[in-house]
Image 1 (cartoon, rainbow, N blue to C red):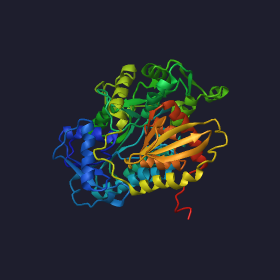
Image 2: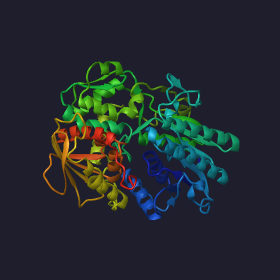
Image 3: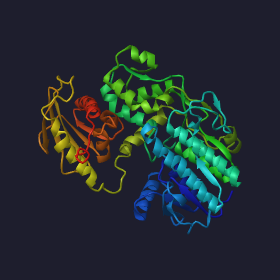
Image 4: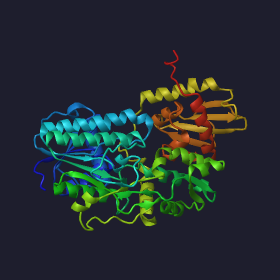
Length: 493
Protein backbone atom coordinates (compact mmCIF):
# COMPACT_ATOMS: atom_id res chain seq x y z
CA UNK A 1 0.00 0.00 0.00
CA UNK A 2 1.23 3.48 -0.85
CA UNK A 3 -0.15 6.23 1.37
CA UNK A 4 -0.46 9.22 -0.99
CA UNK A 5 -0.85 12.04 1.51
CA UNK A 6 0.09 12.81 5.11
CA UNK A 7 -0.51 10.58 8.12
CA UNK A 8 -2.14 12.19 11.15
CA UNK A 9 -0.63 10.47 14.19
CA UNK A 10 -1.70 10.79 17.82
CA UNK A 11 0.54 9.61 20.67
CA UNK A 12 3.92 10.24 19.03
CA UNK A 13 5.50 11.00 22.43
CA UNK A 14 4.46 7.59 23.77
CA UNK A 15 6.42 4.35 23.63
CA UNK A 16 4.56 2.77 20.72
CA UNK A 17 3.71 5.93 18.78
CA UNK A 18 7.31 7.12 18.76
CA UNK A 19 8.76 3.88 17.38
CA UNK A 20 5.95 3.55 14.86
CA UNK A 21 6.73 7.11 13.73
CA UNK A 22 10.39 6.17 13.33
CA UNK A 23 9.59 3.51 10.74
CA UNK A 24 7.23 5.80 8.86
CA UNK A 25 9.76 8.63 8.80
CA UNK A 26 12.55 6.26 7.73
CA UNK A 27 10.48 5.32 4.68
CA UNK A 28 9.88 8.97 3.76
CA UNK A 29 6.23 9.24 4.79
CA UNK A 30 4.96 12.62 6.00
CA UNK A 31 3.61 12.75 9.55
CA UNK A 32 1.41 15.38 11.12
CA UNK A 33 1.88 14.64 14.83
CA UNK A 34 -0.83 15.82 17.23
CA UNK A 35 0.74 16.80 20.56
CA UNK A 36 -0.93 18.23 23.67
CA UNK A 37 1.26 20.92 25.26
CA UNK A 38 1.27 24.52 26.52
CA UNK A 39 2.49 25.93 23.23
CA UNK A 40 3.83 24.84 19.86
CA UNK A 41 7.49 25.37 20.76
CA UNK A 42 7.30 23.10 23.82
CA UNK A 43 5.33 20.51 21.82
CA UNK A 44 7.99 20.48 19.11
CA UNK A 45 10.87 20.19 21.58
CA UNK A 46 9.11 17.36 23.41
CA UNK A 47 8.40 15.48 20.18
CA UNK A 48 11.92 15.77 18.81
CA UNK A 49 13.42 14.82 22.15
CA UNK A 50 11.24 11.68 22.27
CA UNK A 51 12.28 10.69 18.76
CA UNK A 52 15.92 11.20 19.70
CA UNK A 53 15.56 8.65 22.52
CA UNK A 54 14.65 5.93 20.05
CA UNK A 55 17.18 7.05 17.39
CA UNK A 56 14.60 8.34 14.92
CA UNK A 57 15.70 10.70 12.17
CA UNK A 58 13.35 13.36 10.90
CA UNK A 59 13.32 16.34 8.59
CA UNK A 60 10.70 18.27 6.68
CA UNK A 61 8.43 15.21 6.67
CA UNK A 62 7.50 15.76 10.35
CA UNK A 63 5.05 18.49 11.34
CA UNK A 64 4.00 18.98 14.97
CA UNK A 65 0.41 20.16 15.44
CA UNK A 66 -0.78 21.52 18.77
CA UNK A 67 -4.01 19.86 19.81
CA UNK A 68 -5.85 17.59 22.24
CA UNK A 69 -7.92 14.50 21.48
CA UNK A 70 -10.24 15.42 24.36
CA UNK A 71 -11.45 18.45 22.39
CA UNK A 72 -13.88 18.49 19.49
CA UNK A 73 -12.02 18.40 16.18
CA UNK A 74 -8.96 17.60 18.37
CA UNK A 75 -8.65 21.31 19.09
CA UNK A 76 -7.32 22.06 15.60
CA UNK A 77 -8.74 23.60 12.44
CA UNK A 78 -9.23 21.58 9.30
CA UNK A 79 -6.82 23.90 7.55
CA UNK A 80 -3.67 21.99 6.71
CA UNK A 81 -5.39 18.59 7.06
CA UNK A 82 -6.77 18.44 3.52
CA UNK A 83 -3.99 16.11 2.37
CA UNK A 84 -4.33 13.71 5.34
CA UNK A 85 -5.12 10.29 3.92
CA UNK A 86 -4.78 8.15 7.06
CA UNK A 87 -5.20 8.61 10.81
CA UNK A 88 -3.26 6.41 13.24
CA UNK A 89 -4.61 6.80 16.76
CA UNK A 90 -2.09 5.70 19.42
CA UNK A 91 -2.78 8.19 22.23
CA UNK A 92 -4.30 6.69 25.38
CA UNK A 93 -4.14 6.78 29.17
CA UNK A 94 -2.53 3.63 30.60
CA UNK A 95 -3.57 3.76 34.25
CA UNK A 96 -5.15 0.89 36.18
CA UNK A 97 -6.08 2.83 39.33
CA UNK A 98 -9.73 3.39 40.30
CA UNK A 99 -9.11 7.10 40.81
CA UNK A 100 -8.28 7.50 37.11
CA UNK A 101 -11.57 5.96 35.87
CA UNK A 102 -13.13 9.27 34.84
CA UNK A 103 -9.94 10.40 33.12
CA UNK A 104 -9.64 7.05 31.31
CA UNK A 105 -13.12 7.46 29.89
CA UNK A 106 -12.41 11.05 28.86
CA UNK A 107 -9.17 10.17 27.03
CA UNK A 108 -9.65 6.59 25.88
CA UNK A 109 -13.36 6.66 24.99
CA UNK A 110 -14.33 10.28 24.31
CA UNK A 111 -10.92 11.05 22.81
CA UNK A 112 -11.29 8.18 20.35
CA UNK A 113 -14.78 9.40 19.42
CA UNK A 114 -13.33 12.83 18.63
CA UNK A 115 -10.68 11.19 16.40
CA UNK A 116 -13.41 9.25 14.58
CA UNK A 117 -15.50 12.40 14.08
CA UNK A 118 -12.53 14.12 12.45
CA UNK A 119 -11.81 11.05 10.30
CA UNK A 120 -15.42 11.13 9.10
CA UNK A 121 -15.10 14.79 8.09
CA UNK A 122 -11.87 14.06 6.25
CA UNK A 123 -13.22 10.75 4.88
CA UNK A 124 -10.06 8.93 5.91
CA UNK A 125 -9.52 5.36 7.18
CA UNK A 126 -8.42 4.88 10.79
CA UNK A 127 -5.84 2.64 12.42
CA UNK A 128 -6.61 2.26 16.11
CA UNK A 129 -4.21 0.97 18.76
CA UNK A 130 -6.25 -1.04 21.24
CA UNK A 131 -4.85 -3.66 23.66
CA UNK A 132 -4.93 -7.43 23.86
CA UNK A 133 -6.30 -7.01 27.36
CA UNK A 134 -9.73 -5.93 26.16
CA UNK A 135 -10.18 -9.67 26.81
CA UNK A 136 -10.52 -8.72 30.49
CA UNK A 137 -11.06 -11.73 32.75
CA UNK A 138 -11.57 -14.19 29.92
CA UNK A 139 -9.73 -17.51 30.04
CA UNK A 140 -8.68 -19.90 27.31
CA UNK A 141 -8.33 -18.84 23.68
CA UNK A 142 -9.37 -15.32 22.67
CA UNK A 143 -10.01 -14.84 18.95
CA UNK A 144 -9.22 -11.65 17.08
CA UNK A 145 -12.78 -11.35 15.76
CA UNK A 146 -14.16 -11.42 19.33
CA UNK A 147 -14.52 -8.29 21.45
CA UNK A 148 -17.19 -7.92 24.09
CA UNK A 149 -18.62 -11.37 24.81
CA UNK A 150 -19.93 -10.43 28.25
CA UNK A 151 -16.56 -10.64 30.00
CA UNK A 152 -15.76 -8.75 33.18
CA UNK A 153 -12.72 -6.49 33.38
CA UNK A 154 -9.82 -6.23 35.80
CA UNK A 155 -9.83 -2.42 35.74
CA UNK A 156 -11.33 0.60 34.00
CA UNK A 157 -8.42 0.80 31.56
CA UNK A 158 -9.45 -2.51 29.98
CA UNK A 159 -13.10 -1.51 30.04
CA UNK A 160 -12.46 1.90 28.45
CA UNK A 161 -10.32 0.40 25.68
CA UNK A 162 -12.98 -2.23 24.95
CA UNK A 163 -15.64 0.48 24.74
CA UNK A 164 -13.45 2.60 22.46
CA UNK A 165 -12.72 -0.37 20.19
CA UNK A 166 -16.44 -1.13 19.91
CA UNK A 167 -17.02 2.49 18.91
CA UNK A 168 -14.34 2.18 16.21
CA UNK A 169 -15.96 -0.95 14.79
CA UNK A 170 -19.46 0.61 14.87
CA UNK A 171 -18.12 3.77 13.22
CA UNK A 172 -16.61 1.77 10.36
CA UNK A 173 -19.85 -0.13 9.81
CA UNK A 174 -21.87 3.11 9.80
CA UNK A 175 -19.57 5.20 7.61
CA UNK A 176 -18.21 2.49 5.33
CA UNK A 177 -14.68 3.78 6.02
CA UNK A 178 -12.09 1.03 6.64
CA UNK A 179 -10.39 0.49 9.99
CA UNK A 180 -7.50 -1.58 11.26
CA UNK A 181 -7.45 -2.41 14.95
CA UNK A 182 -4.27 -3.56 16.64
CA UNK A 183 -4.18 -5.26 20.03
CA UNK A 184 -0.61 -5.32 21.38
CA UNK A 185 0.17 -7.25 24.56
CA UNK A 186 2.71 -5.98 27.14
CA UNK A 187 5.22 -3.73 25.41
CA UNK A 188 8.82 -3.76 26.62
CA UNK A 189 12.09 -2.26 25.37
CA UNK A 190 13.38 -2.87 21.87
CA UNK A 191 14.98 -6.18 20.94
CA UNK A 192 18.40 -4.66 20.21
CA UNK A 193 19.23 -2.37 23.14
CA UNK A 194 16.19 -2.46 25.39
CA UNK A 195 15.28 1.14 24.51
CA UNK A 196 11.84 2.47 25.39
CA UNK A 197 10.34 5.91 26.03
CA UNK A 198 8.17 5.22 29.10
CA UNK A 199 9.04 2.92 31.99
CA UNK A 200 5.64 1.69 33.13
CA UNK A 201 3.80 -1.61 33.55
CA UNK A 202 6.29 -4.41 34.24
CA UNK A 203 8.99 -1.78 34.77
CA UNK A 204 7.32 -0.83 38.06
CA UNK A 205 8.04 -4.35 39.34
CA UNK A 206 11.59 -4.20 38.00
CA UNK A 207 12.05 -0.88 39.82
CA UNK A 208 10.85 -2.39 43.07
CA UNK A 209 13.43 -5.17 43.03
CA UNK A 210 16.14 -2.85 41.77
CA UNK A 211 15.63 -0.77 44.91
CA UNK A 212 14.78 -3.55 47.34
CA UNK A 213 17.21 -6.33 46.37
CA UNK A 214 19.93 -5.22 48.82
CA UNK A 215 17.35 -5.10 51.61
CA UNK A 216 15.80 -8.49 50.79
CA UNK A 217 19.15 -10.27 50.15
CA UNK A 218 18.89 -13.83 51.47
CA UNK A 219 15.60 -13.35 53.30
CA UNK A 220 12.59 -15.42 52.34
CA UNK A 221 10.47 -13.35 50.00
CA UNK A 222 6.97 -14.41 49.05
CA UNK A 223 4.86 -12.83 46.32
CA UNK A 224 1.27 -13.65 45.44
CA UNK A 225 1.17 -15.05 41.91
CA UNK A 226 0.29 -18.13 39.90
CA UNK A 227 3.56 -19.70 38.63
CA UNK A 228 1.68 -21.46 35.84
CA UNK A 229 0.19 -18.28 34.41
CA UNK A 230 1.90 -16.65 31.44
CA UNK A 231 2.94 -13.09 30.64
CA UNK A 232 2.82 -11.99 27.03
CA UNK A 233 5.71 -9.59 26.42
CA UNK A 234 6.63 -8.20 23.02
CA UNK A 235 9.53 -5.83 22.24
CA UNK A 236 8.39 -2.38 21.16
CA UNK A 237 10.33 -2.45 17.88
CA UNK A 238 8.90 -5.82 16.81
CA UNK A 239 5.35 -4.72 17.67
CA UNK A 240 5.76 -1.45 15.76
CA UNK A 241 7.26 -3.15 12.70
CA UNK A 242 4.37 -5.64 12.62
CA UNK A 243 1.77 -2.89 12.90
CA UNK A 244 3.39 -0.79 10.17
CA UNK A 245 3.75 -3.83 7.89
CA UNK A 246 0.05 -4.68 8.32
CA UNK A 247 -0.97 -1.04 7.74
CA UNK A 248 0.92 -1.06 4.44
CA UNK A 249 -0.74 -4.33 3.49
CA UNK A 250 -4.04 -2.40 3.41
CA UNK A 251 -6.12 -5.24 4.85
CA UNK A 252 -8.74 -3.92 7.30
CA UNK A 253 -9.35 -6.11 10.33
CA UNK A 254 -8.41 -6.82 13.93
CA UNK A 255 -4.92 -8.06 14.75
CA UNK A 256 -3.33 -9.46 17.90
CA UNK A 257 0.18 -8.02 18.10
CA UNK A 258 1.34 -10.57 20.64
CA UNK A 259 4.08 -13.06 21.40
CA UNK A 260 3.25 -16.61 20.25
CA UNK A 261 5.55 -17.91 23.00
CA UNK A 262 4.62 -16.11 26.23
CA UNK A 263 6.83 -16.69 29.25
CA UNK A 264 5.54 -18.49 32.35
CA UNK A 265 5.60 -16.58 35.62
CA UNK A 266 7.70 -19.32 37.16
CA UNK A 267 10.35 -18.76 34.49
CA UNK A 268 10.09 -15.01 35.06
CA UNK A 269 10.65 -15.60 38.79
CA UNK A 270 13.86 -17.52 37.99
CA UNK A 271 15.04 -14.60 35.84
CA UNK A 272 14.34 -12.08 38.61
CA UNK A 273 16.22 -14.26 41.11
CA UNK A 274 19.27 -14.12 38.85
CA UNK A 275 18.91 -10.44 37.98
CA UNK A 276 18.58 -9.20 41.54
CA UNK A 277 20.28 -12.00 43.54
CA UNK A 278 17.25 -12.81 45.69
CA UNK A 279 17.54 -16.62 45.90
CA UNK A 280 14.66 -17.18 48.31
CA UNK A 281 11.98 -15.44 46.27
CA UNK A 282 8.99 -17.67 45.57
CA UNK A 283 5.35 -17.49 44.49
CA UNK A 284 2.45 -18.43 46.77
CA UNK A 285 -1.29 -18.06 46.48
CA UNK A 286 -3.15 -15.58 48.67
CA UNK A 287 -4.24 -18.27 51.12
CA UNK A 288 -0.66 -19.43 51.69
CA UNK A 289 0.52 -15.83 51.95
CA UNK A 290 -1.86 -15.21 54.87
CA UNK A 291 -0.74 -18.30 56.78
CA UNK A 292 2.44 -16.58 57.88
CA UNK A 293 3.03 -13.03 59.01
CA UNK A 294 4.36 -11.06 56.05
CA UNK A 295 7.68 -9.26 56.26
CA UNK A 296 7.91 -5.52 55.74
CA UNK A 297 9.20 -5.97 52.20
CA UNK A 298 6.60 -8.57 51.30
CA UNK A 299 3.87 -6.14 52.38
CA UNK A 300 5.50 -3.31 50.46
CA UNK A 301 5.69 -5.42 47.33
CA UNK A 302 2.06 -6.43 47.76
CA UNK A 303 1.06 -2.77 47.82
CA UNK A 304 3.29 -1.83 44.89
CA UNK A 305 2.01 -4.73 42.78
CA UNK A 306 -1.66 -4.44 43.82
CA UNK A 307 -2.73 -2.85 40.51
CA UNK A 308 -0.99 -5.64 38.57
CA UNK A 309 -2.09 -8.52 40.82
CA UNK A 310 -4.81 -9.82 38.44
CA UNK A 311 -2.19 -10.13 35.69
CA UNK A 312 0.01 -12.22 37.98
CA UNK A 313 -2.72 -14.81 38.42
CA UNK A 314 -4.09 -15.49 34.95
CA UNK A 315 -3.81 -14.60 31.29
CA UNK A 316 -5.72 -15.91 28.26
CA UNK A 317 -4.19 -17.28 25.04
CA UNK A 318 -4.24 -14.67 22.28
CA UNK A 319 -5.03 -16.29 18.94
CA UNK A 320 -3.02 -14.74 16.06
CA UNK A 321 -4.78 -16.20 13.02
CA UNK A 322 -5.43 -12.90 11.22
CA UNK A 323 -2.00 -11.53 12.13
CA UNK A 324 -0.21 -14.62 10.79
CA UNK A 325 -2.20 -14.53 7.55
CA UNK A 326 -0.66 -11.12 6.80
CA UNK A 327 2.66 -11.44 8.62
CA UNK A 328 3.57 -14.84 7.24
CA UNK A 329 6.84 -16.62 7.86
CA UNK A 330 9.54 -15.51 10.29
CA UNK A 331 10.06 -11.98 9.01
CA UNK A 332 9.54 -10.60 12.52
CA UNK A 333 11.53 -12.84 14.82
CA UNK A 334 10.68 -12.25 18.47
CA UNK A 335 13.64 -12.92 20.79
CA UNK A 336 13.29 -15.43 23.59
CA UNK A 337 12.13 -13.87 26.85
CA UNK A 338 15.14 -15.05 28.84
CA UNK A 339 17.74 -13.75 31.32
CA UNK A 340 19.80 -12.11 28.56
CA UNK A 341 16.81 -10.17 27.27
CA UNK A 342 15.61 -8.98 30.68
CA UNK A 343 19.13 -7.99 31.65
CA UNK A 344 19.14 -5.82 28.53
CA UNK A 345 15.88 -4.17 29.63
CA UNK A 346 17.17 -3.62 33.16
CA UNK A 347 20.54 -2.23 32.07
CA UNK A 348 18.87 0.29 29.78
CA UNK A 349 16.41 1.37 32.49
CA UNK A 350 19.27 1.83 34.95
CA UNK A 351 21.31 3.75 32.39
CA UNK A 352 18.39 6.10 31.84
CA UNK A 353 17.67 6.22 35.61
CA UNK A 354 14.15 5.02 34.79
CA UNK A 355 13.53 8.19 32.78
CA UNK A 356 14.00 10.46 35.77
CA UNK A 357 16.30 13.02 34.13
CA UNK A 358 14.86 13.03 30.62
CA UNK A 359 13.26 16.46 30.84
CA UNK A 360 15.17 18.96 28.73
CA UNK A 361 14.00 21.96 30.69
CA UNK A 362 14.34 22.52 34.42
CA UNK A 363 11.13 22.52 36.39
CA UNK A 364 9.86 26.02 36.85
CA UNK A 365 8.87 27.07 40.36
CA UNK A 366 5.22 26.21 40.90
CA UNK A 367 3.56 28.75 43.20
CA UNK A 368 0.75 26.37 44.05
CA UNK A 369 3.13 23.59 45.12
CA UNK A 370 5.32 26.04 47.01
CA UNK A 371 2.29 27.27 48.94
CA UNK A 372 1.13 23.72 49.73
CA UNK A 373 4.55 22.58 50.94
CA UNK A 374 5.17 25.62 53.12
CA UNK A 375 1.63 25.57 54.52
CA UNK A 376 2.00 21.88 55.31
CA UNK A 377 5.17 22.28 57.37
CA UNK A 378 4.52 25.72 58.84
CA UNK A 379 0.88 25.27 59.82
CA UNK A 380 -0.61 21.82 59.32
CA UNK A 381 2.28 19.71 60.61
CA UNK A 382 3.33 22.31 63.21
CA UNK A 383 -0.07 21.81 64.80
CA UNK A 384 0.93 18.18 65.51
CA UNK A 385 4.09 19.19 67.41
CA UNK A 386 4.74 17.53 70.81
CA UNK A 387 1.85 15.14 70.24
CA UNK A 388 1.79 11.40 69.70
CA UNK A 389 1.62 10.91 65.94
CA UNK A 390 -0.11 7.54 66.23
CA UNK A 391 -1.05 5.54 69.36
CA UNK A 392 1.27 2.58 68.67
CA UNK A 393 4.45 4.52 67.83
CA UNK A 394 5.93 5.03 71.29
CA UNK A 395 9.06 3.07 70.37
CA UNK A 396 9.83 5.10 67.26
CA UNK A 397 12.74 7.53 67.43
CA UNK A 398 14.12 8.80 64.12
CA UNK A 399 14.83 11.92 62.12
CA UNK A 400 14.75 12.80 58.45
CA UNK A 401 15.02 15.61 55.95
CA UNK A 402 12.49 16.34 53.18
CA UNK A 403 13.21 18.43 50.09
CA UNK A 404 10.86 19.24 47.21
CA UNK A 405 12.37 19.68 43.74
CA UNK A 406 10.36 22.82 42.95
CA UNK A 407 11.76 24.55 46.06
CA UNK A 408 15.53 23.88 45.75
CA UNK A 409 16.55 26.52 48.31
CA UNK A 410 14.70 24.88 51.21
CA UNK A 411 14.49 21.57 53.04
CA UNK A 412 12.66 20.55 56.19
CA UNK A 413 14.16 18.55 59.06
CA UNK A 414 11.79 16.44 61.18
CA UNK A 415 12.67 14.82 64.49
CA UNK A 416 10.46 12.14 66.02
CA UNK A 417 11.16 10.99 69.57
CA UNK A 418 9.22 8.11 71.10
CA UNK A 419 6.47 8.58 68.55
CA UNK A 420 6.12 12.33 69.14
CA UNK A 421 7.02 15.01 66.62
CA UNK A 422 9.45 17.15 68.61
CA UNK A 423 11.18 19.32 66.02
CA UNK A 424 10.53 20.88 62.61
CA UNK A 425 13.35 23.07 61.36
CA UNK A 426 14.27 24.68 58.07
CA UNK A 427 17.62 23.92 56.42
CA UNK A 428 19.28 22.58 59.52
CA UNK A 429 20.42 19.49 61.43
CA UNK A 430 22.12 16.37 60.15
CA UNK A 431 19.59 13.63 59.41
CA UNK A 432 19.61 9.82 59.35
CA UNK A 433 17.91 9.83 55.95
CA UNK A 434 16.80 12.38 53.37
CA UNK A 435 13.81 12.25 51.04
CA UNK A 436 13.78 14.07 47.68
CA UNK A 437 10.41 14.43 46.01
CA UNK A 438 8.54 16.50 43.43
CA UNK A 439 5.59 18.73 44.25
CA UNK A 440 2.88 16.57 42.67
CA UNK A 441 4.02 13.47 44.56
CA UNK A 442 4.36 15.42 47.81
CA UNK A 443 0.78 16.65 47.49
CA UNK A 444 -0.60 13.18 46.78
CA UNK A 445 1.28 11.70 49.74
CA UNK A 446 0.29 14.26 52.38
CA UNK A 447 -3.33 14.04 51.22
CA UNK A 448 -3.22 10.29 51.87
CA UNK A 449 -3.68 9.37 48.20
CA UNK A 450 -0.27 7.71 47.69
CA UNK A 451 1.75 5.72 50.23
CA UNK A 452 5.34 7.02 50.45
CA UNK A 453 6.83 3.53 50.30
CA UNK A 454 4.91 2.93 47.06
CA UNK A 455 6.23 6.21 45.69
CA UNK A 456 9.77 5.09 46.59
CA UNK A 457 9.54 1.79 44.76
CA UNK A 458 8.06 3.60 41.75
CA UNK A 459 11.12 5.88 41.75
CA UNK A 460 8.99 8.91 42.70
CA UNK A 461 11.07 9.45 45.84
CA UNK A 462 14.81 9.29 46.34
CA UNK A 463 16.07 8.21 49.75
CA UNK A 464 19.64 8.98 50.73
CA UNK A 465 21.40 7.95 53.92
CA UNK A 466 20.04 4.97 55.84
CA UNK A 467 17.53 3.45 53.40
CA UNK A 468 16.23 0.92 55.93
CA UNK A 469 15.35 3.68 58.40
CA UNK A 470 13.93 5.68 55.50
CA UNK A 471 11.59 2.85 54.51
CA UNK A 472 10.58 2.12 58.09
CA UNK A 473 9.77 5.78 58.61
CA UNK A 474 7.92 5.86 55.28
CA UNK A 475 5.67 3.02 56.45
CA UNK A 476 4.89 4.88 59.67
CA UNK A 477 4.25 8.15 57.89
CA UNK A 478 1.90 6.41 55.44
CA UNK A 479 -0.42 5.53 58.34
CA UNK A 480 -0.12 9.10 59.65
CA UNK A 481 -1.01 10.63 56.27
CA UNK A 482 -4.05 8.37 55.98
CA UNK A 483 -5.27 9.34 59.45
CA UNK A 484 -4.48 13.04 59.06
CA UNK A 485 -4.80 13.92 55.36
CA UNK A 486 -3.66 17.41 54.56
CA UNK A 487 -6.24 20.18 54.11
CA UNK A 488 -5.20 23.67 53.19
CA UNK A 489 -5.66 26.61 55.52
CA UNK A 490 -8.16 28.04 53.04
CA UNK A 491 -10.38 24.96 53.39
CA UNK A 492 -10.25 25.32 57.13
CA UNK A 493 -11.44 28.90 56.94
